Image (cartoon, rainbow, N blue to C red; front, side, top):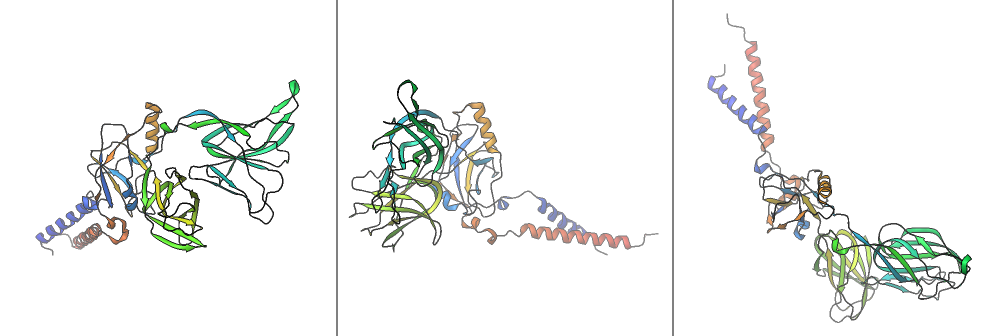
Length: 449
């Protein structure tokens, strides 16, 4: 028969294991994050917005899609946080005249004309290797800024014309989207009975570049003819976007490629690049550089072409689709005396959070296993905009000095395993089995008479 003090000791052990197994998580049980920044709130507001610092991208887990970005209160509890969706931009109407730029026809078996844009965005059309043949069937024009086009008026003609035109739009002179297909341009007669239909209605997202195509050989537009484009343009001063930051990136590798040179630039982290600018090294005065975002050992994405000429203003960047990129390659068809100098422009991702819990708050980034909860933050922000008006914005905050938390251990995943809880559960289950055995023993004993 078990002694009374032995039963008491077993009960105490069992009770301790039970309590520990169901106890709230301690500080050591909290999710591990690699790095953190204290958040400095200037005033009380209904919502706050924080822009990720550059160092955050170096700690964010590559496969998390920034899902390992959280904001916690003074007690370490996560507060309602989510990616910030910028407010819809305001716009104003605009009407402008733009010259039609004819695109020469190519010749069979010979490379056709080359179309590119300068770092300032101007259209450059270079003829093909052979002389063009036949009438022009394609024209380009530059609106100088991204316009949500609504109406395109073609120039008047000297004679009768009946044309069918297709109109496309692009933001980069490479990817084209249709804006009008098979639209009629008619100019017949003079005087009271004349027909003059030279306006085409357009629709679609804002774009800077437009293309006009026709299958007819009697297109009447002479060199220097201008079209009139009407639509709306976004007010740049009212844009709800993070400020663009610039980073100078050193050349990390150079290699001979295709009779020219490849110059690689490795970024300190995969940043959401939206612009690039290049200046030539000492001794070089002109170069044409293909810009490639390298995504693998043999793969990459062409971002456009930068042409650097003497006296060119290098402050006007080449815009690229915003995307996280960490390796940029510049390709020159001719060898340069030294590697070009590259600067990349990027806008940080922003996160909005609600002032829950107890301040001060902390931004935490980088975890192999923890992910931000799916808070309905978009709904909350939409409700605040409805109540406070379209001009309402969440209050910007500033960050204090960054501090290492769990560091690389937070990104190691399964390398760190806390065995405390599993061991306590094992003790709990063994204790439960022992108690059950004691109960069974007592039940088997005959009752005292």
